[in-house]
Image 1 (tube, rainbow, N blue to C red):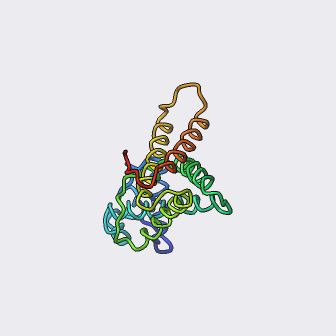
Image 2 (spheres, rainbow, N blue to C red; image 1 turned 90 degrees about the vertical axis):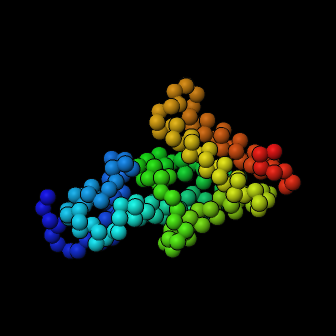
Length: 199
């Protein structure tokens, strides 16, 4: 492998190259040596830019979170009705996950680092996007984490099944997703204030 020539390698170039790898080859392909080959440096030189393979994965996940947050914010910009906000968030999350399969898969595998001062504000912004309309729809505060987890889990499961080709029946998949989301919204907001989750 020839050595990289020209301007010094930037952290953004490393992350962009890593994202291209996970998008093209899958999350399991990400590694120090693989990214080093992509950017034209020796694997040992990668440690001038990232501390470890785990740190590389976190950097990629952080950038994925930024891109997803940007897409979700755009989806609800100007939308006032909270139920419609949730619908748009759900549909945008599904679309983004399908369009960014490798990156989405990696993000799902990286455990959030609560000491990451760059990632945690974005994660909080993501949570706020879902928590705010749930609150406006009457979901009490102590139930909102349960509601957000349920909402996210349903969408994540649908995406995994869809992208692995599991939906083989003739019924329209788009209609199935919309039906699921509407049912989720109705179910989440119908929980009574004195009714514990799982009752």
